[in-house]
Image (cartoon, rainbow, N blue to C red; front, side, top):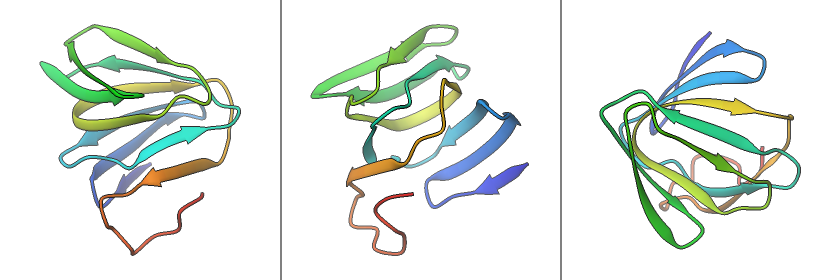
Length: 102
């Protein structure tokens, strides 16, 4: 399933795996239960983890433990999640057209 988002495109691969194509930053968010692993599939991926700016090169991956503030700024990643969980949006770039919690 392919879903267009305000920030880019989300492509569902399996129940716990999807491709995120970020042309604009996603919201700064965290999850109560769910942990994620992101693997870069574009040449460069720009993100924040807590208050650190991180650049991943193609093929590199990063684990995002539950409760960690994170934001995909730009690039393409494969996201693997270990659970389904609501998303707490801490900052959403003044996009007021969506709910704060999924």
